[in-house]
Length: 396
Image (cartoon, rainbow, N blue to C red):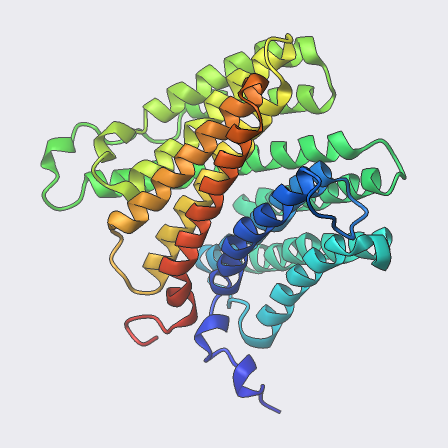
């Protein structure tokens, strides 16, 4: 029996994984932030087992960012492997599971925290299994590390749930593991796509001026940055403050050197490219702030937001806009409206990190940052939402 028309792969919205999941990421980025602000100041209540800050952290790390990761992998893995993509009813079911997880956590005080945890953690586990199957079938074992990272996200989410339920003192460990996993994702995947996209653009037609400025191939600097970052995150997870501080400083400097070798300044006139570099720059900034936090110079929350809101918040918006344009048959160019979205998000990130590092700025800075974040994602939904719902321009 064929699938009903609304569940068919021929429906544009269900034709590839980036469509439902990038739409979900944009919606939840704005809605979850809008729900949290009045709850934080006591103007509203939520029927969840999570404390306000813990719910906010969980939904940003595993709700919003989790949807973006799912959309990216469901779209990229078929390209990596040549295996068929998840489409139609199965894709809708996976997206529905993500939405069910969000609702279950929001109502977990009545539904039950254990039920909410199972529904929430199921998505990254299923995503990891689907990814592993495609990679193994195609013989593409090089990318199996991605499966491990997705499973770490599932573990981090489970640890965060266990802390909220009072089963173990694992709330902070779950939060740190979630951030650490995204940092390694950005270091590995961002470290692959940013220099590649930059190299392709700089060597394109009419750009002979940049022929001597192409990003170098992966080398010793990249390897050192990855190793130092992994060691830093391991020490952070083990809560070895005096050990992670020098490691984080070294990792931050190595990541800054790595980024500088990618020739980002040469892409300053192409917003779709420069935003990738500006997103990645929060990685060395966050690691250096983590070093400062390790010796008590700054609150750790400043480093967490530089790595979280800064690095993967900016990278998510950058990758989503680029992927949507490319996969819907549109030119890879950012117009004034998209450039404005990037500016709003960068302003939100900068203000949030400053407000975390300088608590004396008060709640106004947090609210201003949150408002800019919401505006950036509402703008994303207005500009890119219709593209996600319609057919590719070429009619495919």
